[in-house]
Length: 296
Image 1 (cartoon, helix red, strand yellow):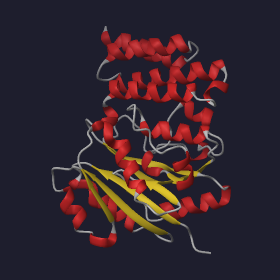
Image 2 (cartoon, one colour; image 1 turned 30 degrees about the vertical axis):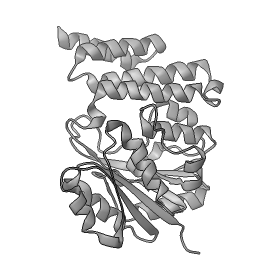
Image 3 (spheres, one colour; image 1 turned 90 degrees about the horizontal axis):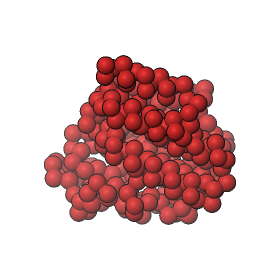
């Protein structure tokens, strides 16, 4: 029996330098049928030229720039143009190993999952992060709603989702602007979506100095909004008081950790907010002490 088609959605804005690597890694997937959809969000560099070199090997969408608030709509536009049973997301500066999608399809067949994510190898500006996104022995499967409340441990470029589930939860939230990837996983889990994991790091996730993911104040606010929407959902209102408090505390603690080296005073403030929600986190107390010692 042939494998189902996987539609790969690649959003890009001014990504001419890295885009071809992402497209090639999608086109070179082994043992699966793919279509590659590149959505150019009004780039002003050579992105359009890179896309046009691929001709009919890919589906190209060129749209007017939607700004920082438009990434969700850009991805939704890509999905709307797709025909696959599965949707896979790939950021324009990330890469895949050739057997990434085939490994996910096998995991989906094994578990009857609606969403399959993989481990990821970090590369680029990785001075403060580990080599891999996850411990391969601790990657979770099944109903992950409460686990995802605690942390967004799923990399966007690692994920493959059934198109039917994506449509049922109305895709990426376009308004308000929030942490759109975490929001999507939480919506999917709240709707009963089942997750499977591929422990091998078949996704390569790029860290950049000054990247959007390092705008820590903005990211904290967007993550808090995504989390609060999940907690306000029907499924979220069923979780325990302790889960709710731990989830809110984790956003503050994680944000503080990323900010500690550049803005220790703000980091201390966020660590303190985390402790208000959940005062039993020893690592959070260590963060406060380290920040105070560093400022003395």
